[in-house]
Image (cartoon, rainbow, N blue to C red; front, top):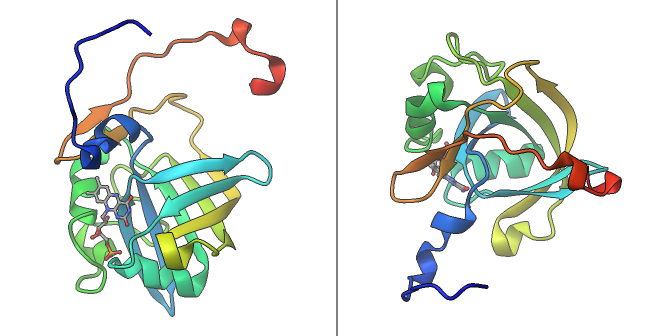
Length: 180
Ligand SMILES: Cc1cc2nc3c(=O)[nH]c(=O)nc-3n(C[C@H](O)[C@H](O)[C@H](O)COP(=O)(O)O)c2cc1C
């Protein structure tokens, strides 16, 4: 790699560079109560079955609801929902009803700007929950609006700052077929 001018960087801030996945809203239901939280720490683990891992901190009310119900829905908000994303991520379902507070319907959709994409998940593996708060889910059903193909998503860089997805670059012809 080319030599560049680099300086020491705080290891607890590397998230700024490694956390590019879209911010999601994770909704849950347990004993007739619903809740929703903002989440940035997730990763895809397998194509088929469709596995994704989510880090849901034990301090969050959602952690307990999802641990009990073993289910959640991952919703993908676009930039239109930025303030809602921030609001949902700075309030707790232990204290307020966030669906009521943020004008969401129980189908996880906002009355005005519904998330375009939602994935219904079932807990696949809980071996890492106790130690790392890491839940591995199988996406059992996916609902995706046909357009836009590349929604304008939010990507958190820490410190209250988001990047927004933008330019699309294709190198499809250079990919091995099994990689597509
Ligand atoms: C941009 C953003 C990203 C967040 N990412 C995560 C995350 O990856 N994991 C997590 O446990 N909490 C994350 N949070 C914090 C929760 O959303 C927050 O603690 C929320 O109040 C939890 O709500 P609950 O107590 O109703 O579950 C994030 C918050 C924001 C604003």
